[in-house]
Length: 196
Image (tube, rainbow, N blue to C red; front, side, top):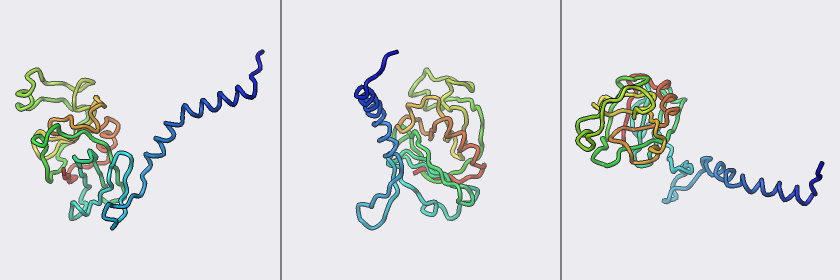
């Protein structure tokens, strides 16, 4: 049996700690911290992704059945339950261009697990290879979809996780599949939605 010298053990322990240091530092910076607004007038909660906490009162008169704000600038979706006790923030994908972005007030009118997908005429015009897709791993709507009162605009999942945090959609708000599953379960039909 070979014995390891104390100096070698210290070296190996130090090298192992250095290997994990970047992960530890990233984890520490992802915790929300207080920052002062540039005007110095108020404190703003931010995290590493520049998500800014929102207050539903800035967007709606009441919470109603619940409320969602999709902020296309920070690429974040904010959700509040009807009683305001549940507040969540999710990273999203957003429309590729401002022309594809519809802004304003709408609501969730329908929900579907395992949605199928049919490209819109304007999508087919931009890419004639697009075809109908049944539910499954190639479907661009992911595992769950919430349909808005605006035709062809949805909040949905995606199997292509590279799209989250980017301008990558044709108008919809996309979330990781685990996030849309959580949001889908918490969001009743009739939930009000504002897209900024």
